[in-house]
Length: 265
Image (cartoon, rainbow, N blue to C red; front, side, top):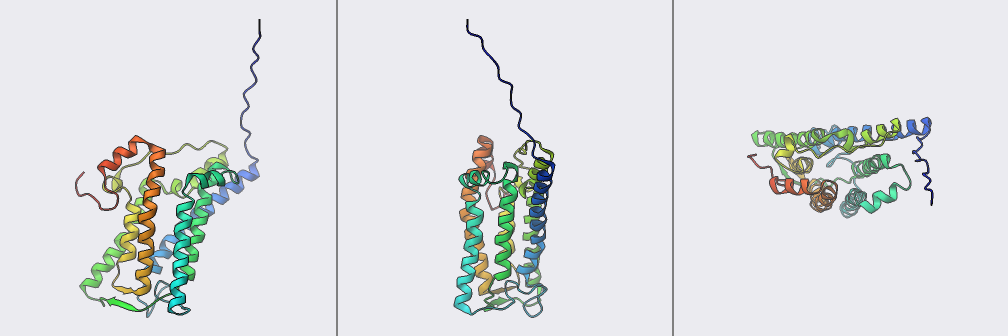
């Protein structure tokens, strides 16, 4: 009669406290920079207040430029770098490669760090092309455009907070790493803005980059680049969400439009 021996189950050893603390700092720094970029982006896109007296230099229309064609090439390169970083690092095979280098719970923080770097490079090295296409001055139409501009960035912020910015920007996962606990993903959320539109953050960005009383060639190029990124990235992002949530998200897609909010529930 053969006897069966049962080997003891090996529990995963927690990382050393120093490593866990470094991981927490790694996640927190990514989160903090991402939070800081949001107001920086608003000021950058709004030239607050106009090119003659911007709050921030450089901004989308203010700052030193290397000449028209050189500026166009540099700007296209910066937009491509931003778009490729966001798109490629969202793919599963890239995530799996990153997880061979950093712990799984810090993969999202790594993505956020890379996204922060790509955005900072875009904002700092952007080459203004201040050829005016229209200027609405300071009348009621200008006030309406300023209102839409502000609304777009508020929608972006509200969309992030309604699903959990801590998870979106990797801090919640880093906290789990610090505690030495396995991270449990949050359930799919479809409340508030997500009852009306599937991607309110993308909607907010589109409104924010396309509105404003003052529009130049450089501003249009920036808006076109972000619009193209959103149109392409949205398809790949939804594939990943379907893999994560399955039929629940498929049903949600049938009820709620991607970018144009529905008026009725």
